[in-house]
Image 1 (cartoon, rainbow, N blue to C red):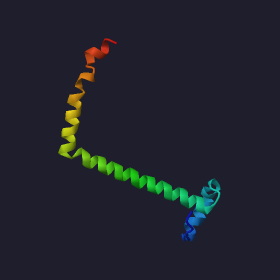
Image 2: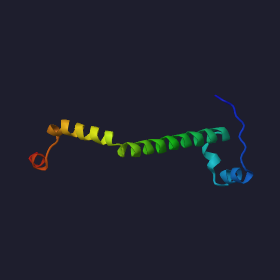
Image 3: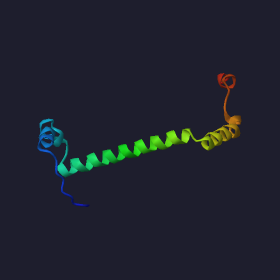
Image 4: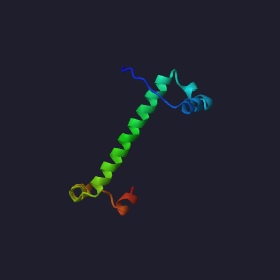
Length: 85
C-alpha cells in the first residue's frame, strides 16, 4: 500500500458528506481508491474502444476477417437450413 496526501476543495468534501457519499465507505482513503480504480477502468475501456475503432478502419484486419469468414462458411447455417430445426 502506498500512502499519499490528497488535497481537495472544501466545497467538494462538504458535498460528499451532505450527499451521503461518505456513508458508503469505511474511510476517505477507501473512497479515493474506489474512485481511482473506476477512473482507471474507464480509461482502459475508452482506450479499448479507440483501438477497436482503429482496427475497424484497417484494411488488413478487414481482409483477415473476410478470410476467416470464408474458412468457416461451411459452419454457418443459412436461413433455410436453420428453419429445418
